[in-house]
Image (cartoon, rainbow, N blue to C red):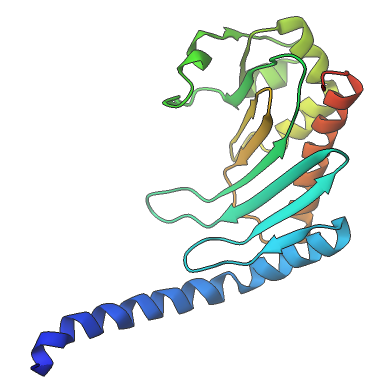
Length: 202
């Protein structure tokens, strides 16, 4: 076998190796941040493997929360996503998105049919579009305290989805500080506590 025949393969292996090393080094600080959060909250961290970002798993009461933060590039924004498990007795389907932005719902076309829900909070109504099926119940869930916490992310952008089985929150930001995760956890836990106190759980 001639050297020229294997050069493309060698070049590909080297390129993948260099990219993996860069990805691993870049995630080193993220691993440390998540490890500290896991230590404080009694959780665990799935370390970054190949090109997957590290994930934090935390148990809160009867809920399981998974969080991961991904750094974007020119084509994709940086995001931090949290998914919390639920077991609701009623379908409280709801989405909250930043106003004046277009979103597509390829996986959940029924969301388009939800009604717009206004709140008696001009700042919140100006920042977010809330859609859902049960207006009276959802207004009890989105308390003034939760509205205030959501507004903290209004400038960067935040999307919240609530279903019978999960609560998903995506923030358009890469978390690089302990305070970022602390504030995010405060929002998640406040919503979960409100759902639990409202006895919407099975």
